[in-house]
Length: 264
Length: 225
Image 1 (cartoon, each protein chain N blue to C red):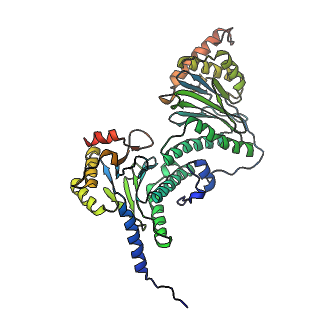
Image 2 (tube, helix red, strand yellow):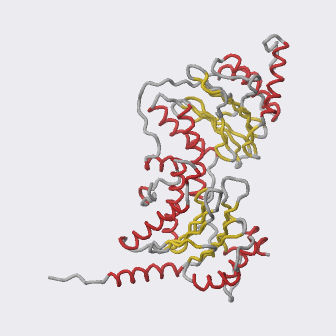
């Protein structure tokens, strides 16, 4: 790779994606027949001090390919990015997003706004999903320092970006997680309430969707739980996550595998 | 038939060098120095937004003196090169030496083949790790690249500033001392530079992947007091 110099009229600006396209660093994709499982559940819930995200850890093809995949990653200090869909494209997508936000910051000496980050990802999702069957559906959540609140952005298959004021889910377990969230969400949720609700919604998805893994007490593998607040992206420890899921699991065991009439 | 003027290569190079030197001498100078825990970059710069010092990558910083639009384009190219290389291979494969060489080639090409030589002098600094040493690469307008052992001075008045700084700091010192001596060397005996005319950036390990920080006026004042 030589020194990437551009004249003023052909300069790709601070967008790493546009530079990478020009320099041929991105994969050229075409139509082909591939399996495109989007077996996953990732949940984002807003609370008064930010956003909570919970994601399962299973990669599924025809069988379980991996049990400890990380589907939520920090995109930068204040932003979390989750993916569902084809793993290969999803990983490239996360790298592209992480690098892009940092690239913009270095090029312009100012950070992108949260909304700017969300909009930036739209054409990347669109280009991927409309030119290949290897779909990727991301979800962006973060702390917006200029508005002092947590915000969630979800995407459709064509790259459309929608802000959600309550919660959002991606992946095959979404219907089950969504039902739980719809029943349990309140706009005044505190951090603990949001973590509880997120864990319960993921437990429900793991219980009903064959491609979503709930807590795995045998292997001591648990879903990822993350908070994004004014303190930035923080991941809960395995012990913290394990104790939350153990409480839910014990209750369910006592009531014979059903919720037992209340949201718990 | 009119004959084109013959200009000897020696004359051509001399004219171009003079042109570039004049352009560089019009701007203010800067000092880059290794201190006990990192690399310090100090520039005399009255503008608070048109920077001469910038982050390139996790452990690499850039500095330029001379014509702003020319070194800023080189800075952007450096960030693109580093991010592109890290994206294609791995973050640990991004090496300041490779970037310094590309800069040297480009400046050399522009000096001999360009419409006019670039009126800039630039510096690529790398904070050492277990993979690579701490380095200061100074690249002159004609593409000469120098691997400076402890400190580097860029700009028109380099020789005088160099003598002043070398006299003040004979070995590697802590940050506050290095900054004081660098500012004194830039200012000279007759001037004092106000903090608002200083641009300071450092590369230092603080437990983060990214090691570059731009110091605020308050931080500079504290170090200088």
